[in-house]
Image 1 (cartoon, one colour):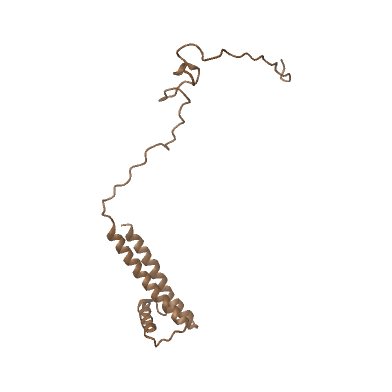
Image 2: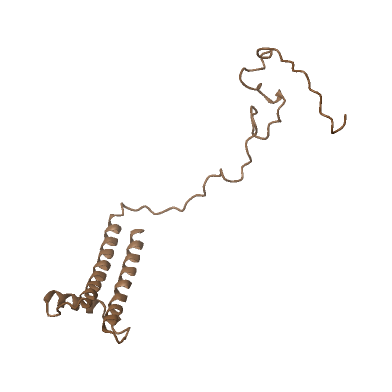
Length: 165
């Protein structure tokens, strides 16, 4: 027979009806044990199906974690972090409020405006005259805005660190 000729059809012969004879066969699956004609079982394999996939280390137990010292409920650390966070926010709000009052040309003889200005001057004393611009509005914005931003960044960073303790 050549490669170009079609194969002749084989007649269909149905096998015996019912399960094969003998106690070695179970209904509904292959016979137990390695002698049913399948591949030989691998190491640690009991037969009765395909061997398990190779283990590439994914099923290894996780590495032991570092022992941490026992700590309480963390209420003190959370409270300290909240206090630090709140103080930083209040400082930034006072500085931002002074910038807003200055830009809106609030009456500086008003006691509230005087209080906000004196508090902002005290909070931003270390940053006064970093920026010396011709425009008074820009100078106030940057000389008080920079300390507000620094208070926020440092205060929130410290409070996050304290919260992890």
